[in-house]
Image (cartoon, rainbow, N blue to C red):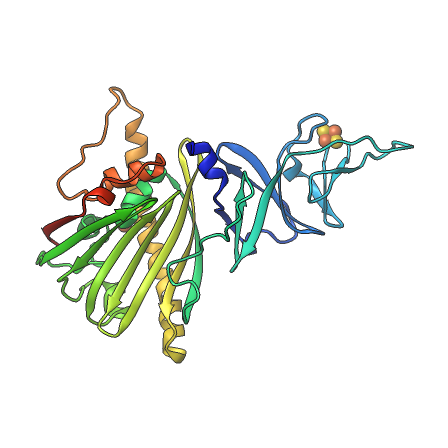
Length: 332
Ligand code: FES
Ligand SMILES: [Fe+2]
């Protein structure tokens, strides 16, 4: 199956349900402008270009669940059919705007350029008894760099000093097992001590293991297991909106433990947003710098366990870890 064909079989998370209320919203989807809105048939995704004079439909307004172009007022329903040409008397000609598949699940909007049969993948604790918060981010970067950033434990000592890691420089020997299969790779960390960063101190008990996983086409997830089960998890859906922008929609997940669980999950979101800002800063710095000649391929260092696997998965290929699982020892 070609990479293009494969993508058609997938849903991609593009927005939070809360982003699409009374107004249409324009997004870039695989480099194409789309308009999202609530139609009579439910959430709709159309190519954001009026076939008449090519104006952005998203700059128009919603009238009775249809989108009205701001130029001459032509209207389109959720299926992309032109339903009104103001001033025209007589039979309506059949004009259409290209329509994309769109569904809404658990507060998130998914779009596809094909018609996937499977339900969209939401997050790693789907169907479990958990509390979730949803977040959205926009980062100047590429999907591979942004995904690697989420899964890379080694940058936390520097980029997130004090937040995800302690202020001291003490490290512990940690075992990392990398395994993979068709469309996924994961690194499992064991032997970590309790983390001294603010987030960990507030939210976690003793840590048993951490899993960082990447899934096709751009999903990065982290799962922290404590002695008594799930401590925290996050699943982030990333996509390349345009050449320099990665849009992310994600779930922050915690175990449901009565009111305490709810409070912890609430505390997690603002702290997580600080971490997100710190990451955005380094990723933007790298992206800005990448434009200068000579063009440079990034060095894949000895601790960059997942880089080649993520690249292979994004390209629609089997990751190296699928053929040969690896074990590393590092100081973390
Ligand atoms: S450009 Fe949209 S109605 Fe004319
Ligand atoms: Fe980070």
